[in-house]
Image (tube, rainbow over all chains, first blue to last red; front, side):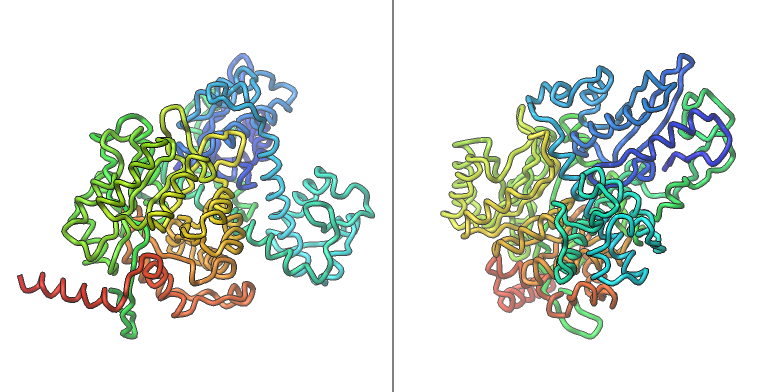
Amino acid sequence: MRRPAIPQIGGDARIAAIWNQLVGVMDPELDESIVDLGFVEDIAIGADGRVDVAFRLPTYWCSPNFAFLMADDIGQAVRRLPWARDVHPRLEDHMVADEVNRGTRLGLSFADAFRDFEVGGTLEGLRDTFLRKAFQRRQEAVILGLRRAGWSDEAIVTMDLATLDCAVITDPEGARQKPRYREVLLARGLATRPSDLAVVSLDGEAIPVASLPVHLRALRAVRINMEANGALCRGLLDARYDEGPREATVPPRHACGGAGASKECCGGCALHPTGVAPAARAAGAPLAM
Amino acid sequence: MFRTPDGEDIFIIDGHTHFWDGSPENQANIHGKQFIDCFYAYHTALSPKDKLWTKEQFEKYSADKMYNDLFVDGPDDMAIVQSTYLTEFYKGGFNTIERNLEMAKAYPERYIVNGAFDPRDGEKALEYIHFMKENYNIKGVKLYTAEWKGDSRGWKLTDPSAYRCLELCQKLGITNVHVHKGPTIIPLDKDAFDVHDVDHAATDFQGLNFIIEHCGLPRLDDFCWIAVQETNVYGGLAVALPFIHSRPRYFAEVISELLFWVGEDKILFGSDYAIWTPRWLVEKFWNFEIPEDIKQEHGVDLTREAKRKILGLNAARLYNVDVEAQKAKLKNASLAVAAE
């Protein structure tokens, strides 16, 4: 399948900047970057500065609410670039593509975008559900990373934020998740000062050392589920856009660092003859196996 | 029958199979096309390369091919055939009970055909349950909560209309409720794959068994919690099992979680035919050993006895199949065929 490549060096700096922004957009259910997952299909910057980001999901049936969240997050992430004002996320090949695209184009709330479906609610509760799961998955990786680095269970459950910040985790998944764990820990207000406990329950409670194995068991279930979904989503996306069994092909990569089949994705630079593995996939160690 | 490398005969009940027509001629709209395309993506994503079908083969296959794939080339002794209507997507339905019964009628000793109902039909749903019991003596139903109907984009087991149907099933002895959790759209602000309605229904209908297909994936963690609390909740292995080929270590973690939380008495093998064929699944499953480190970490083991239960004995219990009598019956039937 075509997988967008992330620019290494050179090329159109604006395209590179957009890719960098999109790396931070997560599939809420998987807690993985939409770039890493291969969801971003195309990026185009028009002569008037308009930015189009096309994305597609593993199936036509993927949850509409997640699709809406991702479209919304794409728009927000790219608009953080000072020069990008007119940003158009575009969901493709999906059962509610029209509703999502119209909603994001007009800046509608979720309820208004899906007015025909007669929903009144917002997505905040849903977003929170998956942030809690993300917290759990990230925390497990950090705890296991600390154990592997020689920390005792007693030291882990009594560790404060300042100590966590200084702790060195070397296993790849633990090292990857540590800053992400810290981010969600602070965002949820579970730790605010350097002296606050760094490894706490979802409700901010200290974890008795005797309970740590049971606590870890619950975290592990969350992680295994997320990994299953991630593996499934990647497989389905590959299958969907590969149109049948054959060897994977190298994606077209643009000299500017952008990616996508169309010349419009970057204004029409020359294509590199060979593809380069996306940096996030190479560095991210997305799956345990 | 599956014969192990060391000569033991294992009785196999394939808990989740289909006889569908997803062909372009039967598709009513784009959704019908996308539905079968999605199934085909599951097929191509997780099958070994030498087990892949062409799209045309996959869209519609014959009763003979199904029989061959399950019982001749395949190791199944019996198969449970699930009915899924999807009449909004397919002109003649995707696999209605009538289509399934027609396919199965030549082999009554092989197939158990389940019904289906849609609680949004109201009184008609209740009448239909009576009809299926009286005419087809169904022992189970397949419920697809993500099915579209008119303006509705899904339903929950806890809907009052669904409760009326489940009450009737319990009363009539239609005891096995297979639940498939697809991405329901409404309520749109909630988790579309949420499995918590199973929890309530299982508590309230102790006379029913709830078999959650795909082990609740993509909500395996929530499913495990529910299955621990509810003695009448089971997990169907379809979709989880094919990982055994592409990601065996990953499958080891999933089956370990299931063994720990759900237990070996409540896990059912299912090929999800024709998404996957049973032969390679059963062979790989029988030969599968959980890696030592995962075994230690989870504190579980996939023993020979656990494999026997998962591959057939658990489903036999749910469907009141006397395994020894059934083996004798199948042997006589195959001798009769050979003598013809």
